[in-house]
Image (cartoon, rainbow, N blue to C red; front, side, top):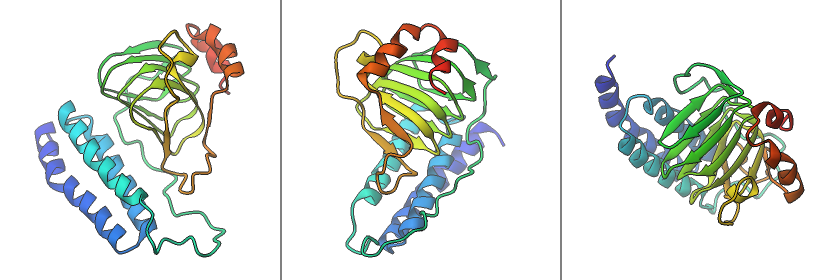
Length: 233
């Protein structure tokens, strides 16, 4: 199928996916709504390969609006009784974006919307108002400024960015979150907020905030991917 045909199919189906999430939310089927929201997110990630950047940003905003609706507490949400089982969230999602050539131990400069997949032990410098999505990456550092930063199926990552939106995590683990100024000279801003789609009750099992002492240990290695990666195991 051509990119144009895939785009037309997306334009027709994606709003229906979001409406399905809203319908489940209205029916108080919270777990099903969350699963449908994640499915919509994966659809949007796949569309990054063939949709114009401004359309991706527009649909990301629509998806974020629905996510905020689900984040609002509902009177019938099940906090009244203790449940030992975890929420039913898919744990093994397929790769949702085309993987570029595998890269390792590189220093990468990003100045435009980008999807980076299957990177290992890389240092990524960002300076853009748009979005960066990291898919299935490990032992990498992301440092700079960015409009949106999203991580999927990634682990042992350092994310020190100035961003007006929360850093979003999906199926991630061992993520260190900090400010851009923790790693390079920059105006001091607050550390970014984090939205972890696998952490329904905000227990922060999959990420921690970078402390000043550890930041000082990492900082000298910002131009040395191998050395930095060895500290992110």
